[in-house]
Amino acid sequence: MTEPIRTLVVGVATLAHDDPAQPHAGEDPVLAPAVELARGLGATLHVVHVYEKPAPVLAAYAQSMPYAGGGLCARYGHDLLDRLRQQVTRFGYERIRCHAAEGSAGRTLVEVAAREKAQVVVVGATRRGRFWRNLLGTTADRVIRGSPVPVLVLHQPFGAPVRRVLLTTDLSHESARLHDRGADTAAALFGGALELRTLMVVWFDVLLPPPLSEEGLREAAAGELREFVAQRPRADRIQPRVRFGEVPREVVREAEEWPADLLVLGTHGRSGFSRLALGSTAAATLRGAGCNVLVVPRAAVAVPKVAVERAFAMT
Image (tube, rainbow, N blue to C red; front, side):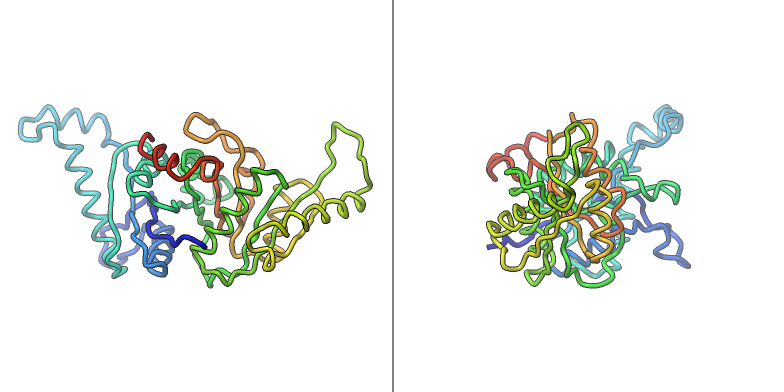
């Protein structure tokens, strides 16, 4: 049975401007979808804004003045927290908790998620202008690498209810666990009446001679995928799908052509902040995806729940 989502964490990089004529100008685009998602779930939403210290010259100047003391940075943080609280009041949802903290955005979001025992972290895909629209934002990248719970990466607002969910697999044992956790989380977030499709992409290894023709490879992969799907908890509602080509490109194409409302990816390899980058396949797929993406880190399935909570406390 799918465990309900009770707690979400969302990171907001920008705050709305203090302009009565344009009350929502500058508001982080990830905030409204996160609030509506939490409202639909009846969940508590922790809204986190992470900031840098005021300019060093200003801070040093203020500390040298007797009437300023050493509290400039603290007052700066309190002012940002007040602005954040005022901003979220417009949504009229009582189960919002605000946090403002100085430091690394990626690390702080993971720490808040650990402390509040969040089941999902929500981030925006990018924090830059048009030139950077296809690059995965630094904060999203660090959260995915450090989080032991699924991360919802928003490329766009939810224009309609999420119905079509595209899952991926390479048929490995680890991939099966990531696949099932992703399906469970998607159902918990968006309801059980989802249309599910599981995609497997096959491609010739350039270092080895092809054992079969492209068509033969497709048929063999389709048989293995059908067996994989038959062993899944939601087998009767999952449509298997095989594509041939480079994995990131074909996953993105399938998501566009179907079209999918949500793409679910699992990340392989080590987790934690010591890792320098996401796996190349997951990173390339995230950059190319036009729909929202639910990323299931390896740490979300690699250890028992008790161990995950212990890891949260040590983050």
